Amino acid sequence: MNTPLQSVTRRRMSRICFLAALAILAAGLLQGRAAFAEEIAVIVNPANNISTLSPEDLARLFLGRATTFPNGQRAIPVNQAPASTVRVAFDQALLGKSQSQIRAFWATQMFSGAGVPPAEAPDDAAVLARVSADANAIGYVAASKVTGDVKVVLKK
Amino acid sequence: MSDVKRLPRSAAVFLLALFASPAALAQNAQNPLQIYGYLAWRLEKVWDELSRDGSGATVKTEAPREISLPSFNVMMQYKINERFKTFVNLSGAEAEDLSVNNIWGEYAHNQYVNLRFGKSYRRFGLYNERLDAVPTYIGIEPPELFDKDHLILSRTTLFMAHGWVPLGAGELHYSLSTDNGEGGPTSDDNVPLGFDMRYNFGLGNYTVGISAYTSNGDTTSDVALGDGSPRSGVLPWMAADDFHVLGSFGEFQIGNWLIQAEYWRASHDAERDPESILAVLANAGVNDSQRARFLIDPAGPEVASNVDTDGDYDITTWFVRAGYSRETSYGEIVPYFQWDFYKNPETIENKDWGGDAEAGLADDGEFTKVTLGIIYRPVPSVAFKADASVHTQKFNGEDERYPEIRIDVSYIFGR
Image 1: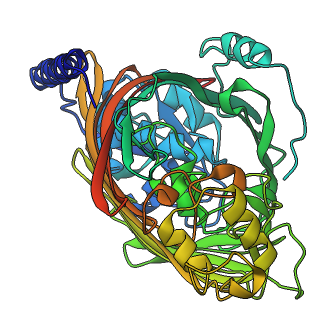
Image 2: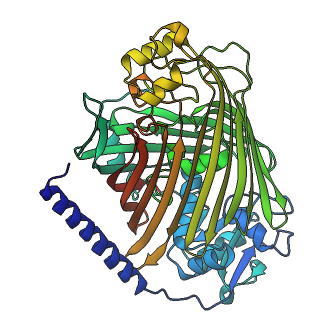
Image 3: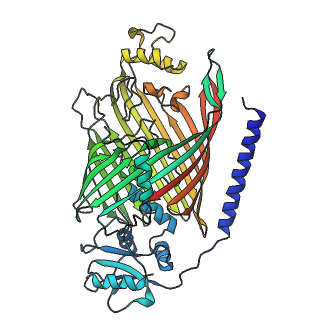
């Protein structure tokens, strides 16, 4: 049997929780994010003999399900920094996941021992440098930043 | 499974967590050794807790608030080379001690065949292992399916093969395993088998699958009667139990929504041990329904000849949950809903005698739990969660409900 004081306390707690949830949701709905307007180019080293890569194969490499290119060559994916606009656009457009969904995905992988996320490079220039220097590397940059030192295998 | 190492309460736990801050343990994915983990604190409050008074009438009491450190986990992945890796998960429930949850090594032959040997989470396939391993997937509160009170899943030492093949626009994954059984003496030389098969499609955003396990013969509990609840699938008052588990699951990432559902059924072909049943009746405080299951004539004397040794029973459980993730400049917000159902008619409430506090409380071993909650992650490594649940079950012949609220804070380090 609850005392009147307990009932009042419970009602107050419910009201506070409800108002807090409402405030948080309202704040969230007012926020937006700047979009990445450019095309994304997925790049590999010119020594790699693949010429194209399907979105499914790309997702397998960047989500840790595959460790080799379709031609059997070892693959080392290179991600961009999590907060970068090109990374956000890549995750959404080519992996079909938001930032939080990507974090949740890697949490499941890491905590169960299934794998760890790819290495990260800080910007387009660093990704270009890594991919041009490593025959097994695969990365992505803004399409306008592509140089002759890498080969484009997918654009979106 | 035995604990490998015990440490003084909290000292090692908090020091390790303190020093293992994200900055201190910022990892490069090329580093072969990765160390990370999580801590979770909980404030829990239950109202209208159900019990019986001396005359057998229902009594509802307000339970005191509980503050706990329900989980502390440190994980280490070490990639020896391109084909071999090892994984260790040390866990400290309530920060009392550290025990080894998982320790295994894996050889990756190719995408089709990976071989794992060691102590692992679940023998019901990799989907549930991954789902169970994460504190803040949708919510910190796990489905009843993963509750340690419930017997449907357990931890064991196993040998597993797993892999995947491309199929259409997706991938067909499998795992096949055998393990060291329940830990107790068995009358047969069983070879338990577990498997799961699941299809990932839509860039991995959709998963459907099935999973199964068989003890492949009679087996017994991993704890003696009176030594607490078993961690295996067999109740301690069974003389023998041949059981089979079948489950199905689905997960769908649709825009900002994540929807998960599972259904499981465990069928036990079991035989009760009369002397153990008499000990339970004398010491564990069973209710009338449980007494009626255990005895041929519930009104008759508590003697071995009156014990019903036919202990066949089925456990059924399912859950549905959905969360909506919203990214804001203040962090991520995830309101979520979860609906659990669990039924185990054979269990009792008293955990010291091998029972299950939730299912055993109900007259018929059946309860539902509806949960509404919200998670706020100001930064990816920190989550605050508040949720409220209502348990519904039949108690003393009446439909009774009791509410509870939980406030959790979790901190992921080393990422």
